[in-house]
Length: 312
Picture 1: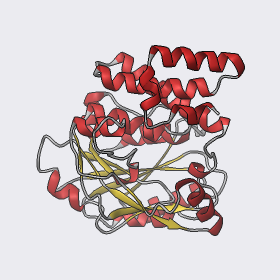
Picture 2 (picture 1 turned 90 degrees about the vertical axis):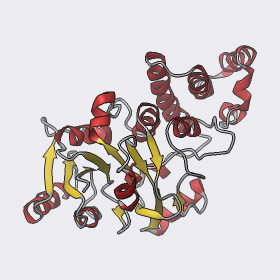
Picture 3 (picture 1 turned 120 degrees about the vertical axis):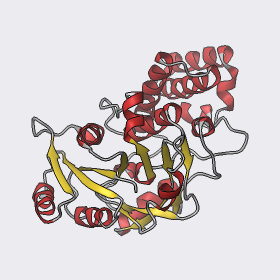
Picture 4 (picture 1 turned 60 degrees about the vertical axis):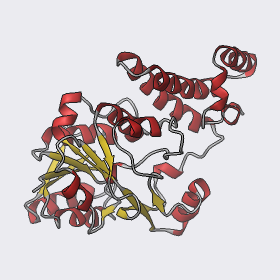
């Protein structure tokens, strides 16, 4: 049987936390739920302590300095504290569905498989949250990929390099990974990224580990959409959006240079990074930079990121 450590970073999630925790501890496969409280300003810490007292599977940690370090650092601490053979993640405002680990129970019987990812659904918890989410993502009811894949095709698919459109990402709530694989790859979240550290982690994970699709047609977890979701606060066509994307793709490009990434994949990462980097420039510096990049790498115009879109 699987023994899974579920890691939940906690920051100002008092309203949702208990539902998230109870959705995870119900599974026989879940050995422990690790709460990493990140110096919340609401009463999340109090709820964490109560849940840890009431439920033997729940373990509570804080950063050594009791400070706020962000979701990436909190997940890293959770990974270090985990005692299960498998790692799963659950955001404090989301929850698991009863079929959460169905695919894992079957597919992890193959020792080659290091990680399984599935689909998640969307639940609107507030009307304002619904409006903001739909303004950015339309009526996205299921976050998933378009077809089954495994191994390096997952990595290439996430970069938009497969003949058929694979999909841009999957979420941490839908991922289960062998802890030994994370340790072997020395893979952790980039703590320098306060946002998009999950996307950064997932793309790197898809290169270093043998991932496989699980249930991509039905949700195995639900994303809670409310007034304070960070994912909806920064919209496209804004400097903030470009800045955050530039930091993400710069992180990936620096990683690609340090690793033996195939040339096509490395170039795609560079072109996306360069698109966002140039979008942040102004005036003649911006447009001369665009022109030089097109001359040097004309394929920048063919990426799914639509180079002209990011140069407004």
